[in-house]
Image 1 (tube, rainbow, N blue to C red):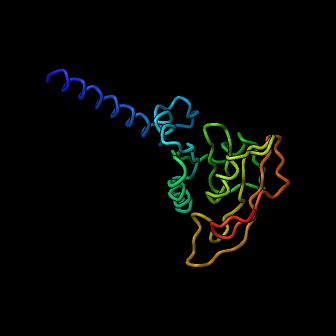
Image 2: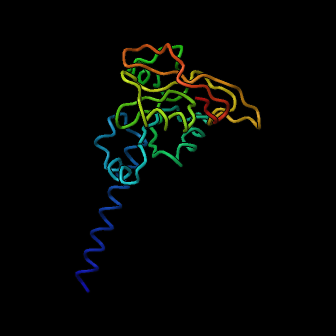
Image 3: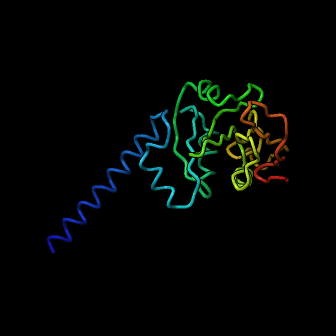
Length: 178
């Protein structure tokens, strides 16, 4: 009986340590998620992990992160230096938005992109691609809901060479059109 209690106590302490380390890391770090023990745990869930870089005071970014949860695992890096993050990934000024998400595999998702477009991209990333971008803050996009108002907006394909000249898809609200 003593052996079972000791084993249970050790296992509980290990899980708590991983959870605390992951929480502290995801709120404050700007380093790679590869060293985050929580990343290894979330991989078991079958969901893609993203580190979302955002301003700590941005409500629409918070809304976008919340809508990710059915499909993705997300950690948040609240930072006031978003330009440095965007520069790191060579995002052109014309394709920037208020937050940047990066998967553990290095794919970049800039702005208010619907889950369906991210899932489609990750299922079959075009050769030479870096990710997707929705510039600005389109009304009705995930995190930018305003009642029932929506607008049609382009989702741009970002390439590793820094170009982003093609439209990957169009969306209206959260609905993506091929």
